[in-house]
Image (cartoon, rainbow, N blue to C red):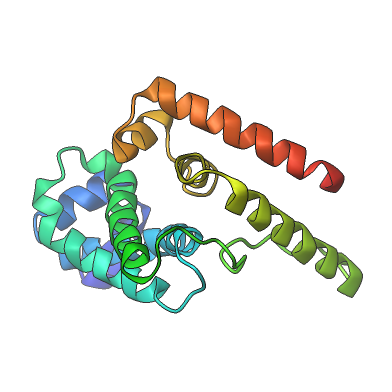
Length: 191
């Protein structure tokens, strides 16, 4: 079987299989993991960082760290959450190095899919809605914002969020409930 014949099977494999093979040194599997997770990790890093200047560097550095530390991953099925923790730590280190608090000014990381027939007015309204959401997220305390981003953008489970933030699941549920309530109130005019 050539590399090209085996590739679709690798691309179709689940995260657990890909991460397991990558932790055994399979460069092809790691490349699949990078392709599969880069959009999520970029969006996540962009929500933590102000602007986009260092997003790609943070994600790239995170993948380098991940490649070096993959054998330490206890559960390959939880590789996405593990990668998000690495990105989170790197991004927060970057934020701490450049400013005293998290800043979510830009909305470049959030994109609503285009709808057929959307004209300039609809696209402008959707951009305004994203700006309002970014403003609502900016108003949240850091812990609530991190929980919301991990859940709503990152798709993490409550357990994964609790593990990443080193908080009990009950605390994560409370933080998310408060964050969602705030966003619902702030976004009422966009319903």
